[in-house]
Length: 584
Ligand code: OXD
Ligand code: MN
Image (cartoon, rainbow, N blue to C red):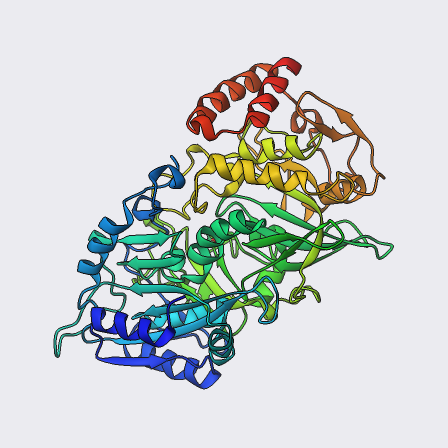
């Protein structure tokens, strides 16, 4: 491990900041930095939300940048065909040039943080060096940041170093912009063998908050492979039935496909209760009893704002009433925030995410489709009492979901672990605004980990299969594929979604205790029936239709896709594909 102080010195010599600030993580520090950002016109305090701020980014810095994200393993084949790769030495040389003098005129913040509850055996310590006060404040909300993390780093002599810069040095007396970034030279780089992160040029979310996608998924996935656990792009929820029995479910969905809504769902089924452990990332390990246990490494939510409302996610709305940062949403003249979907009509006098008076006739959204709120998880009215359990929560089921307007039925249970891993590997979804690029295009996104797996995807599939061999079927969670996004011939959604998804969760809950019936199909088990009371007309035949022609095409496409992984594609999954083809 690098010595913390010599690493800070080395990075300071490279970046040449004007000042260095070691973060203690206190409220007073948060307030001082936020106040300075108000002075600098980056933050605007919101009169209607105590201790909350609005800000907007550069229009070219609004999402994760997958095309500039690299896994620089020693061997290219260890990054695999789904990651960008460059030889570590070559990339380091390039980065050193980029970072050289990049913090002139700025403050270098040292942000010690812990992913996972502080004293959990799951916890991983990190230090982010950044020149972005926005990143510092978001890290305070999203992680356990400050003195306590630093004490653990000093004691354990272990941390994942991460260097981040917006990449815009300031000359003496030069005025800063409200959102400095360097889009032409963006690099989000991971060195998996060295376990370090270098991120340059972007101040936005997953590019700049290094504890989240960079550490808790890309680097952690490599640690998980080496140490026998899983780092997954999954929410974790607790679900209690009307008799008080509680289970935990983890669910993987690609970015901006409703993970936060599902994690905080308000069941429409009487007597059922859902509580939230996490909305984005799960670290999963075996307990001594042979069951899988999950921990949420994060301490906050960095949620997609558009579409969040009192109807779709009242718990999120109650969580963000105070102590929140809003990025790229619209704001109202009286000091509140607004986004598409929050209310049926837009308030008058709205100021768009670009900080200009909003013109509804422009047909542009007032809030950016990937606008976000950042808020402490503890403020969630349904924060699960076991969310900070150092040992995690035991999983009864794992869900894989995509945004598919056709083909994949509402819910389907895998025959066994191996078939479930095949569900994960076959996941594809229509793209969203969470990453730069075209939206609405179908792309393969195995396990919803395409942008986040820090090693060869074929090895990752093999790792999932190997995990299943470490325990027995009665102890492993059951695996399901779900699809809330099916559309009918008229282009309308076939399933109401949101709170009504509790009806699907009920079936899954009861399946995991052998209390619900199922029908066998070539793909897996579908419900014999769902509780649809009070729902009105639902086209169950369409929701569970398995079209053999469409599925044969799906198999063709999967076989082409799996070929990408060459000799690292596990035979067991190719065998699953052959089995499916035969069954169809
Ligand atoms: C996120 C993402 O921000 O997946 O969680 O993009
Ligand atoms: Mn995510």
